[in-house]
Length: 441
Image (cartoon, rainbow, N blue to C red; front, side, top):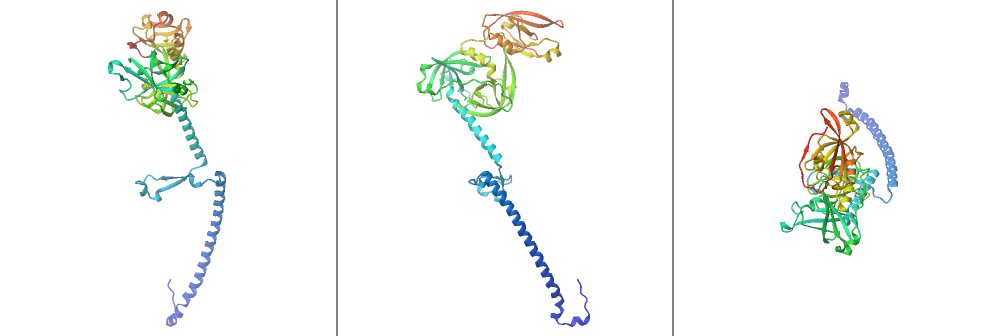
């Protein structure tokens, strides 16, 4: 700002010259001082207000968590992605501290507690499990399990007055000359094969009770068979045996796909897939969270259950067959595969409800009796059968050599004709046979 003065004023002494400026500055400084004082008072008042609020909040949190707890224990330090290098080189400015709520803590604690409890259930099952060893005499007494580096589990299904009955995968004993089982404490005894069912890939073994040390017998116990009913997607399950190829290992997981239908000879299996990682040597049993067996691990149907997922056969699907195996018996054999024809499929294709035959095995009783692919099985022994499982339930009541009357509906010259077939039931003990398949309806 330019100040215009009269010429006479320009000759005044310097002290007089700047008197006006000094007089103008002095009031301005006073005004600024007042303004700063007001701001300081405002800051102090706000600090008191926020300090009181923070103190009240801290008191509330302390009262909720407990006065004896250190709130610092519930702060989690995380490092931003750009922070790299060794621990000593971590820049403190790149550390983010995030608080964990009480509900988060409760959830983490509960999850950890449940996981440990499930693992404890699986670990306790080691007393109901054995390692099965099959030996081939013509191969220099080589353990059949040593080729792939895995081991095969065995589960004690029954303990009688004189013997232990053990169920295992049929691969452990197929083609072997001698079988032994090793208990949890390293005790190894010989076992004899009661029966094998290659249709469900299960074998039953017998161990003389007198060959087992008393100390081992005191701890060993039979498995508890449960039911897969209620097991749905998301259900927690426990895999024991050798789920990763290592005996007595325990894996925890969840069911990711339930009720997978798998067609086998004269029957249908219900299978479940889990989120546990499978290997080619995975084997064992599946428990629910109550500690009951609900399935047996199977790698035979990976095209339906997933190549990388541990899957299991529902115990409900095979329990009756296991019971027969343990008694040295077999399910009567027809030699066909089929799919259920529900009411919707029956209406769409103008056929009756029953079992649509998708495969007939050559040299089987079904083939010899005249059954063919595309037949629809309606009755067996006069009993209506609308599902493959219903057919299986009828066959369970028969034995090898029994005559079975089967009523089928067959397409002849674009018309459906009812035909009655007489079959002579065979034995489930069989070798690989050729079969013919046609696309299902």
